[in-house]
Amino acid sequence: QVTLRESGPALVKPTQTLTLTCTFSGFSLSTSGMCVSWIRQPPGKALEWLARIDWDDDKYYSTSLKTRLTISKDTSKNQVVLTMTNMDPVDTATYYCARMGPSCYAYYFDYWGQGTLVTVSS
Amino acid sequence: QSALTQPASVSGSPGQSITISCTGTSSDVGSYNLVSWYQQHPGKAPKLMIYEVSKRPSGVSNRFSGSKSGNTASLTISGLQAEDEADYYCCSYAGSSTFGVFGTGTKVTVL
Image 1 (cartoon, rainbow over the protein chains, first blue to last red):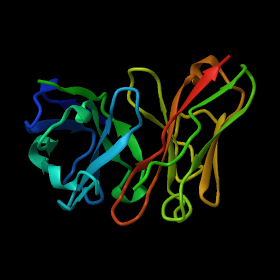
Image 2 (image 1 turned 120 degrees about the vertical axis):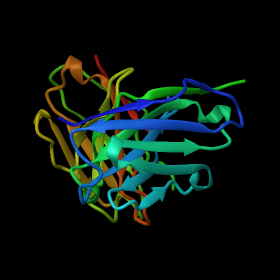
Image 3 (image 1 turned 60 degrees about the horizontal axis):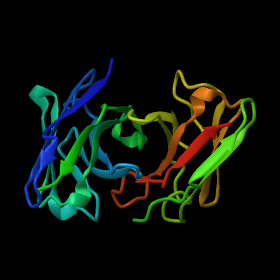
């Protein structure tokens, strides 16, 4: 059974760096063809893809946010970490991690975490 | 990369069929048969309903179907039920390592 769960601060101040962790089970990022993405959704607004990391440590970022994002993985802990620098109130959103499945070449998101709401405010 | 365009809202009575459109460009929807659709109930995570334009994951009702013509993809819900009331988002691969361009979202209301 595949599950994902996001964790991180609920509140960050403007200009701070956000660090979110996705802890997953039911698959391994050491398995060829596996990858995990981060997606966010501002309150009442649409979904936005942010970043992806592959089993072989290839990384991909949203063009518009590329300079602020870093994605990494800890295969031994079944975790994927997303950092976003220079947070702004417009970054207030629910952040989801999702598996791109059943392989990276599927180009759809088959399992999602429940999401974590991050508010950016002083 | 701009978001795909969806109608803000679509409504229908129980038992009716509705169709949600998702309009992109020749760089995303028009170039790849890699459109997926997600259902999202309030306060919940999105749920995959359709992938690769018209394929249904195991467990998704066959009342949901997808299609594509040119730069526009469509999701049809037949035999509309109260539980179908939710937000729906389309998503397309857009090449150049852009793995998810989402639509603007459509709120489906069951009258």
